[in-house]
Length: 221
Image (cartoon, rainbow, N blue to C red; front, side, top):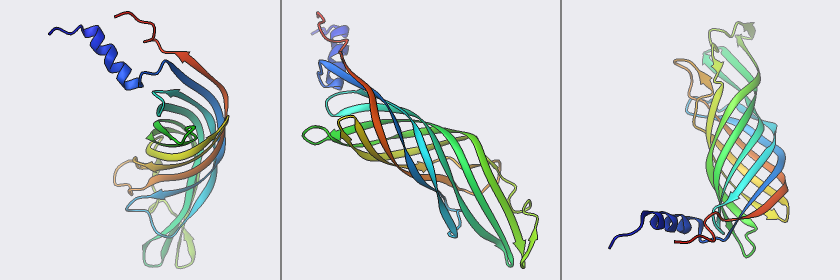
């Protein structure tokens, strides 16, 4: 039996979008705070996480009644303080504040009778727009040059896996998210394996939302 390719493709798309007549999208603002630290096999245990802010815009589009696709454009503050002893009697301290523009993309799944709760998973790419970093070293209680122990520069690009959960209440959105870095924060060769880690809590507000008629509606096979 010969199957028309056009019909076959349309049926696949209908299956993917859940046979929805309408697809909703929404645009809004969000902002909040987070706790930042580093992770990695070379990250020393003597460290102090830092608080930072996160703020930006979000866009979300329904795939079907349960799933949606989302993306954002955010400003994130990350960084930490840590110290380590490269040799006996020598201590190196590093204090950093990293500022990124971040573009996440994720798939979100809604739950509950009114789809008020959600979970999501995705990835995020970040660009380092500015940073403040100080490093200093002491040997037997006297300050020495830290250059031999901390000759590293920061990568301008970062990437992470993200996951989170949240609650929708009319136009208000409460969201909790975890970023786990997959790219070394330091550039160059023979650098320590250290990556970003960031937990944030944000409050969002939907500025605009609309349901649009599916482009696969009112078609003739």
